[in-house]
Length: 344
Ligand code: AMP
Ligand code: MG
Image 1 (cartoon, protein in one colour):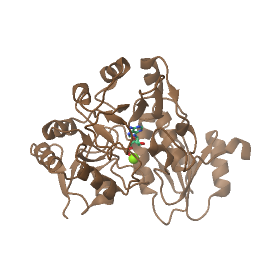
Image 2 (spheres, helix red, strand yellow):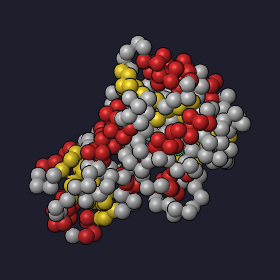
Image 3 (cartoon, protein in one colour):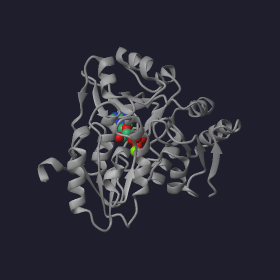
Image 4 (cartoon, helix red, strand yellow):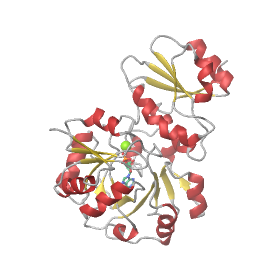
């Protein structure tokens, strides 16, 4: 199959992409978070194709992408007032809400759950495609299962060229990490996955917010978790990722003492001079955490090679957008961290 590369700026693109979606085909779509692998979320066969192409475990549900709350109401019920408040505050944008699913949503899309995850993406071309297609678009992150997410059309082609009908090229993703997921189906709203909306902003809007344990630590393979995606090893390059905590100086000393062939350093731009002999790769500026989220997956992809055996990574503090960056890096590392201050 030849994969069409459709520029977002081309006036014909939304029509072509929407037609493919209506025909039950897969189209990779740009969003402000990461590229999604989209299909008609109400079409079981199309949804099954997403799972097949991604190699996604069947028990990992998909997010439905809609243009607004009015469309969301067609796919979920018993919507609490908080959902309307969050939509008014954060949509279009990187916030996904988990709500009770209506029967029209195939259980293949929700992986058998009676809840459904819904969001309205910011990227205009993608909202236009949803609107023209006239169906909610189910889209997980476009990467092959387990790999770092795609934040450019080039990343999508790397994983799927010749395997999917089309990619809409909207340029690099503004946010660069996936959406924040909040579960609104139980008493207290629960953060299932940190993402593009900072947890502080979400908590301020809701008044209260519980953090699911899968966000902060490794989950046992057999554990029943609320967001099934959280239990899988994720975002991981082939080499072992080790997060090195501590001051700049302590971390540099720790890494220099251990650095060897096959090792790489993933650090902040401000730290590059400290790692001249250690093949450093900077993923953004620590002082501007939104550059870290925008650059993280691209950097992890660059380091995803059989030659790279170990990656010493520097991680931002768990606050603002840094919270999601730290969560993704921790998952890539299987939550393995060392404290350089304690070790030297
Ligand atoms: P991805 O699209 O790759 O970003 O993954 C979507 C994430 O949303 C996964 O972690 C899923 O487990 C989560 N998710 C989707 N639907 C639900 C749902 N109904 N309840 C809880 N989590 C969900
Ligand atoms: Mg994903």
